[in-house]
Structures are given as structure tokens and as C-alpha cells.
Image (cartoon, rainbow, N blue to C red; front, top):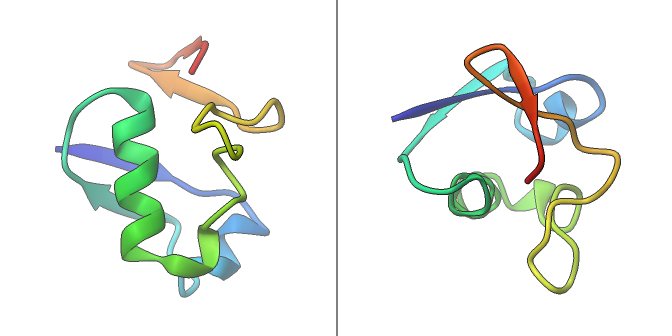
Length: 67
């Protein structure tokens, strides 16, 4: 499982939740599942090609990584 921590304004689009637990997989898999479970987030994290948008910071184990 992956824990996704959301910062405002994305938090507001996820029913005010600071953290959301979703299934594991690649970064893109996790973000897609997050969008499916919270449709208002659709398009905010992934672009139309399915790549992580530049303004989205992804951290794994406290280290920033490329999506």
C-alpha cells in the first residue's frame, strides 16, 4: 500500500483528506488510482499523456524522485 500525502489545494479535491491510502505500484499507478478514487483530482497530477505534472512533487522514503 502507498500513503499519499496531499497539500492544499489538492486536499480540498480529495474531500479534505491530508492522507489517502491506495494500492502500490509505480508512481503513475498510484496517482491513477488516487484519481479514480477521488475524481475531482483528475487531471491535476497527471497530464494527458499519463506523466506526472511538473508542479507535483513525489517523495519516496523521504527522498524526492522523478515521476
